[in-house]
Length: 290
Image 1 (cartoon, one colour):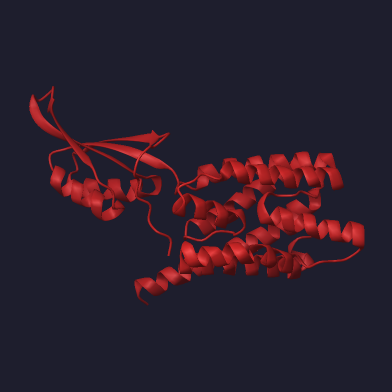
Image 2 (cartoon, rainbow, N blue to C red):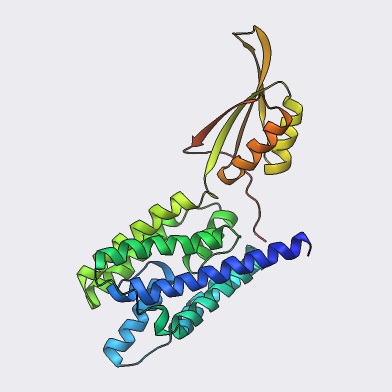
């Protein structure tokens, strides 16, 4: 099996597991506490619960989720990346299927009856599912399609608008059902965001300061592994009174570990300082989604 096939199988496996975890989370923690997550998943649950409460109609979760994601998915396919969109759609379809058809034996044992515990552990499980998709260049759909499109194609940060949309969903949920459940849903969202920041580093950057005797070889490693540039500075090491070169480069956080490993193979004595980059202004290369 070649590397392309292995990568395909890995992506599909992660997307499959992510969809199962999300559906399991919906049928356990989320349903048990009556939580309304953000994004299209939360909107789907709001539509589903509203139809049941006010019209007595049982709408399938999967059908609503697929309909809501249809237009963003098509736009993503045409503008962001073919396989990125396909794997994201696979996740959406599988999540909808699992959520509607998951046997009670998978969920009945995990009914905590405590909305706070449901919000916390449900938020963590939601972050794990999202992280699995993001690490293989896919998403769980919905607002992720919108955010990535505007971020990569328009250069705009729309997370504040998405947050406002989530606030509208939670406000409607509080008005139609229960303010208490809406407030616990906020805890769910906060837990998801906090856990995801710890788990996924694809949108974070790190600054590397590398003092080395082999600047050309190490620059080649940085360029080949990360596709980023580097700036060199020449100085004097005060202890040995010898000329040294320092390379400065900003790379994606998930590139740091393989990069340092490769650098140490070329120059075991290289001195590397890794700094978290809080804000970056200017051109920064991001791998295109495929």
